[in-house]
Length: 440
Image 1 (cartoon, one colour):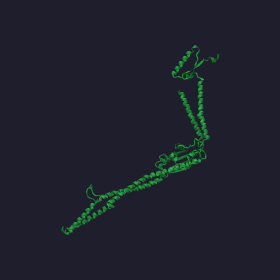
Image 2: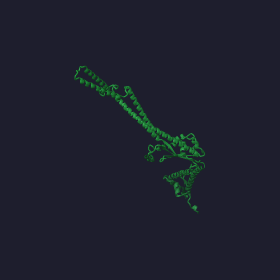
Image 3: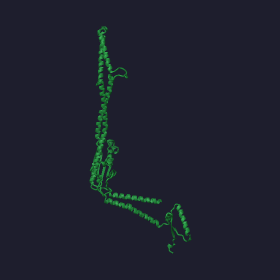
């Protein structure tokens, strides 16, 4: 008997899930009972959470598992070919055969101020602070402006970006396209116009790429021109802001001086006198002269009383003169003041002391307003000088260059990057498959 006949006969069974497993065949009349015991064994294994087919595969390796493994490996290779190798070859062929050459133009400039920077401020500029005289913040403004939508709207009309960036219509990957919204145009602009800012030297580097060298130079020159206009506007705005406060101070001082002078004019028209101080001085001199004359008359009367009678005509005449002088002195003193209490209500027009007090207040206010006005004018002149010294300008030390050889796109670099990304995605999918398979 051959060795093949010595092997025990087997039979195949299907579980409820359709899995195929192999059981040794039984001989004789005990085959039915053996099948019944085997069915109960399979049921118990399922209830315990075990897979009979996997147990049989572990105990009796078969060609089925090997064939499944080979099929899985073939599918992985087919997936690598379809999703990694073939797209990478197609992309590389496009990059080397259809992608158009791109020519670059480079320019560099810096925002500078005409105001000389003190030696104590150099350290602050290096550390990034810069102080009030630093132009770093204005440089950041220019760099952001070049990358914003505003520059697309400010470009000259003779620069048609859609025509410039669509000259190579066959290169659909790197061309701009037509009828794009402003957001997509800005995104493409930032891809083709590279702006970098060196905070240490405050230098802005710009690199423009297009499909023709002259187009790149034209765009770079337009960017340089718009940047210079922006810097001039910033300088003028800074100048106006510096002068605005000084001009407002002068306007306030001038208005105050005019108001005080109007009050002084109204006072003089009401009192009908130019200078109450001069009138007070005249009144004081009059009182002094009247006092001297009264004293002279009293001395003369005292002398005559030694040998004349009180009823003599000479004595009566002297008494009348003395009384008249005292009346005039009282009148003049009444013009200076009433001699009453401070709270007494008097006519200010007839009271020289009150008029003099009002006039002194107006004089002090007028002098203060005039000094303030003169000081404001001097401050305005200094502010103008400082504004002129703080003017900004664009210092261009690399004019837009013209390219003789195409440096872009990086065909090998793009092809290698595409292959690595595709291979990485394929590897992630394979690892996820094995992870799910091991867990189930």
